[in-house]
Image 1 (cartoon, rainbow, N blue to C red):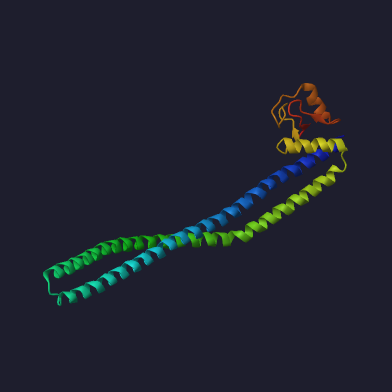
Image 2: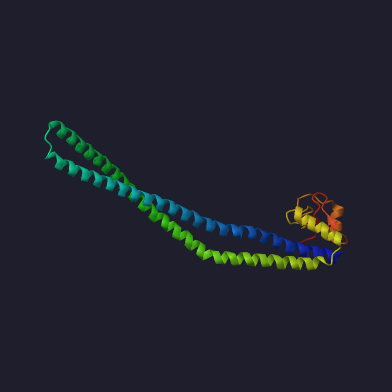
Length: 234
């Protein structure tokens, strides 16, 4: 029986390490995904700002074309002023010229606003591209390393499970089933030790006779509260 208890202790040590490795199998991919998401977010931010910047330049070009078109009309109408004969026609044409000039003034105001926005977009794009470059460099520097670590952890878990399973071959099938159930349902702690006459798994006080039984090691002793296997020490 003492041999079986020793095997259970060794299995628990392996399962404790497996539990730590399992945490890494979640943590490492999360770190990698976080780096990839950061780059994706940076790419999308740059793309959105670039789109706004291009749209701004397009709007400026259209405004400039409107001004040019108005100036062409103004020049044409001013030439016509030299040839018209009636005061009514002169006033009408002059009114149209004033309207076009006023329109040009309004467009100029819009152009100034667009140019100010262009400067802000250009500065924002500059900063966002810096963040994009950093995100790209961070991913490049860590992606291969993290992928390698993930593979190594998965291999370690496989090797540890193999060692644990080899040990389990020397235990009764029912004891193996009990151990596996405890590992699954008790936070990967199937075998715990007597800690000052208390279960180190749940803190339940161990009766004096049970303490003696644990020390003798002639049978598998289970905690009367949590059901874990009690041993002298791990």
